[in-house]
Image (cartoon, rainbow, N blue to C red; front, side):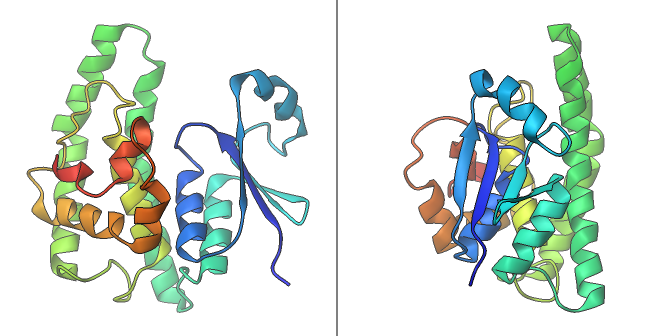
Length: 220
């Protein structure tokens, strides 16, 4: 019997989104429980490390987004069985996490002008380098290829989700057309957004941050 899964996170996309997409692609049933600001103070002490996301598996709690993602990827059949390919998938996920860590670090800058300046420097510096690298990798994979082992893995999902989150409008100063100079990146985003399960997952979204997860968002 398949385990009963309950994924808990806040209402906005973030550290639980890769898991949501993985389980959806794999057609793994799960409940998604959103925690509001009003509920957070009450819920926080009940969590293993006082933070979200948390995945409940038959009532047992699994914390830390990386561990949750790998578990979900295995359930969904998207974690490589080959040890080398699994390591390369993990490598790519770590690479994409660096993108987020750079941008998220600017959230804590209180001065608005300094915050925008820091993001501009990231977009024109480290992010350019990383986008160039990713664009090369995707070009080498081919227009119908994936990043590891010639088939979709959780690394592809992590790349898609991270790309989408960066241009969702949450980070002022990061342009929505960030990927336009990188044709392989925009094509990959469109292809992933067109996967039937992903397309259906976001089809009803008409506004808000998750609009960036829809087909055409990266080339808008």
